[in-house]
Image (cartoon, rainbow, N blue to C red; front, side, top):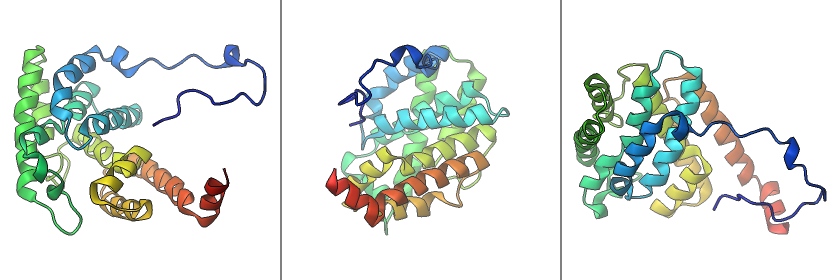
Length: 228
């Protein structure tokens, strides 16, 4: 679990009046996201796709801040809905689609196709512009299998999706998917991310995440953790 409250105050004084105000919540800036989430959440309850999606949306928003040529009205709905198609794949087969040393491309394609269909239904029910729906469906319909990006919007969706793997939550999740130690999970994820990103900003983020995880794995870091 993420630490949200302090366990101590070693300084001994209240400094809360000197802390900057929080940034606006992404769901407040884009209210449609909350409506999409309400309809998509049940479809994302597969192999931690619900949590993965929220992290990926946050990463996409960070990339959007640096990529003015991309459209948040397309990127954010596409990111929120990109993996809902896994709900149409037999649960026991989902991990076989992406397992190391294996893979089921047919299942990857199925989840993309079904994801585009379900996303279209959800966005139509919310009265989203038909052109936006068309763009979102096109992105979702090849977000994993397509090796090239259709446009700047697609670049961000693809990059944010991959970047999640290198986050602490991503590694925690993938470790338990395949019974891997953290170093093994990091090497697996790095091999599937490094050199496969489209934007320089995502590459910088990936390198930073990898560096932090490598530091976690140093013997000196392990000694500190054991002594704490």
